[in-house]
Amino acid sequence: MALGTQPTKPAFRERRIERAKDGRIVIIRPARISDAAEITRRMARVVKEGIYLEEEPDTLPTGREQEKEIQKIREDGGLYAVVEVDGKIAGVALLRRGPLEMNRHVAKFRMWLVPGYRGLGLGKKLMEYVVDGARARGVEKISLDVFSNNERAIGLYKKFGFRVEGRLKGQYVLEGRYVDEILMGLSLQDQAR
Image 1: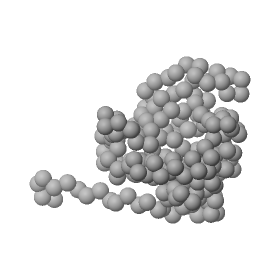
Image 2: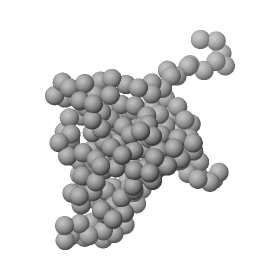
Image 3: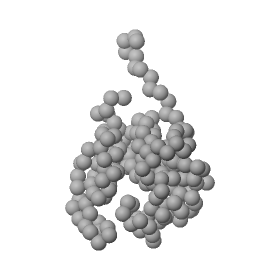
Image 4: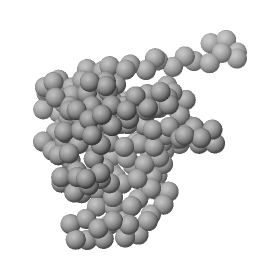
């Protein structure tokens, strides 16, 4: 390689076809506006569990609000992805860019999987997709928050290099117990590209 030249990064593949641990075909792709109603219905199932998302049934977005969110995240340089199994949305992952010039280098991460699709390796595949997508969009840091009782998610995030940056004690009450909110971050500048 000539002096002063940078190795080229492979282009971000927006549509990926992979296999779940059980052998089923998995498609990861950007969310479309036409996905909004299904995303809203599937998200309601996760919220009903009451232990994974900082949402309650009466705070869920309507299909129209979900359409606007997909569009806004896309327009703001973020990423809204869905994972499909057997033609059905099994989960989503999104990166919402900071709204100000002073924090545009950071993207807030959120992910959820519908009951019945956990344990298939979909979370890992979505994380790979999102981290690749963040790099392709020039994101320097990914931040997230997670309930302290969600050990599976915390373990996944740590495998990808996320570090605990803070802890808000007793921030939520889930199933009658106080739960901490853990703040985590991943610096993409610190990782080898």
